[in-house]
Image (cartoon, rainbow, N blue to C red; front, side, top):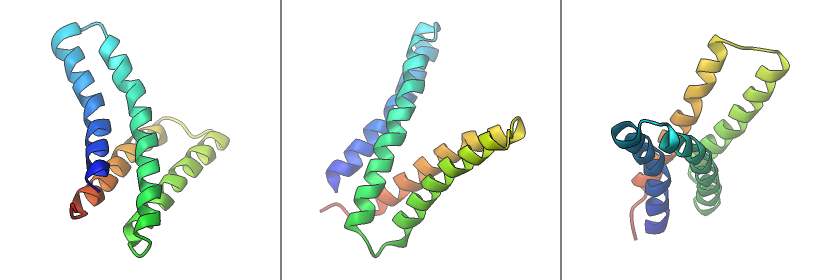
Amino acid sequence: MKAIKIINTIVVALPLLLSLTDYLLAHDGAFLFYALLFTMVTGAVQVILGVILAIKFQDNIHYKVYLIAVVGYFFLGYIADELNLTYGFSYFMFTIPACLALYLSVMIYKIPTK
């Protein structure tokens, strides 16, 4: 469990550190570009961690809710594309991954370290 906490900390902190580095030092957007790319890696790693934890803690409903929310997010994105929803709805869609990342991170850090 300690390894999962370390992995989660790294994948969540790295995009933030790259963004901060770009803001403070570079100002050319290079680090920001890599920070945005790394957010996709963060999402993939968190989905994998969510699946692993849902398998390991089958009696915990929160991991199941997380996985259902992830599937629901991608389904909602598909429906939004099919129905041609834009503008205000896209702002809503940008907030969901951050909420999912926060939700999984809180659940990971509530697990006792063994």
